[in-house]
Image (cartoon, rainbow, N blue to C red; front, side, top):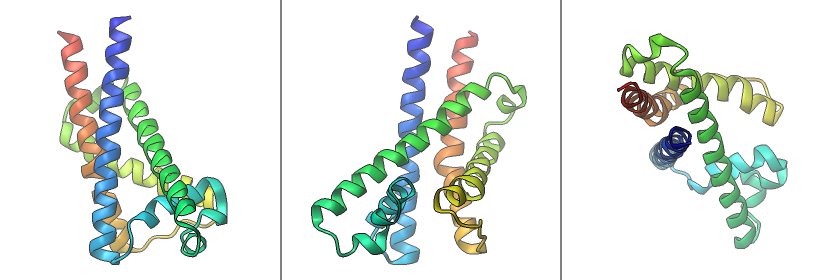
Length: 166
């Protein structure tokens, strides 16, 4: 029971760190590169579930309350996705021995994996669109996910499983 509680508390901590770092990277990137309102990121995420009514163009003219609700829901979905990727990583980590060999390479590779899943599968299915690749935004996105999700998860999982082995 204690190992199960420790596992889930570690996954909750790691998912929160990864989700928060990813959100910070996305917000910073939106402000620096797109010169846009970062709330639109979370509207876009919410529109993946709620459709066009939650899309940024539609919400620009909506009431503040409606904008807030969809932004809040987008944040919730963002963290849900971060927790799913975190749980998946923690479940595969002990089963694939090579993952514990080099934390940096493992983290960078997992960040790339997350980008591929999100951009080649999740976003196209959610928005009924074909995957697209634009070199600069895609490269930034890959780097964000490597640094914000891959590396933290790799180091936290290593520490968790290393302590468990003692």
